[in-house]
Image (cartoon, rainbow, N blue to C red; front, side, top):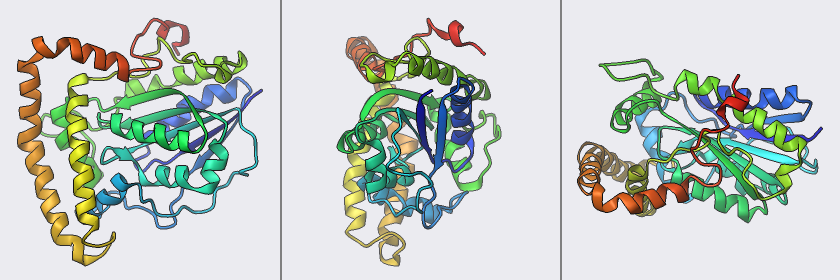
Length: 314
């Protein structure tokens, strides 16, 4: 029997559902699992108002997270594996997960431990995962594997369906667009990762260096989106520093610059993103080798191959 710590924060319930499906096989295999649900001292709204949603942007990118309520886990407890399940806010980890990883308690729980990360988001998670890698390494943890669940809709459709879900709480099919969020079949299939991790723990694989989730379609990267995301994140870093120069979160004096940023976001989604994807499509014969290398690099360690899906089929 191994001891597993699962740290999670879910606003919509979608990530909580995925997390529960990963945890169930671990418990069924006899491993002791503690699920720690992060609770900010001041809760974030759901659904968000447009003002609160935009006002959270600078702190997300600058990793300036508000404090959490005390954890329900003893920080001196020795876990064999830590699983961090998180959302992406503005191409960064959600503020509660950032708060955990930067807190003395979180760092103590991570130090010296193998870590698996799991993300459920719209479709752009690469920048957030790079931040997670850095925060985990800073805490002395060792990132062993990664799982990514993304929205079922076309990337352009999600620019409408996801904001609608975030700002109204409605995620149903609308105006011919698919429902927002991860497809139900993908959520149901999340148990395969729990089965694979349970087996890996029984064989002490968490202490090694080899990927534990190979052949399970753990991560699928769309390299064209990766290029767009990198450009957007560079712009976000500039905007976040500019907005913070006008004041702190919740202060009225930074509302005008937030309005300018919101306008920028709308213009970018309507014009820049489609044009960028179109340009990449037109240049695909030239970009194909680079995109192939980028896909292979970003899908490490377990990748998008499916040769083990039958082994852990529910």
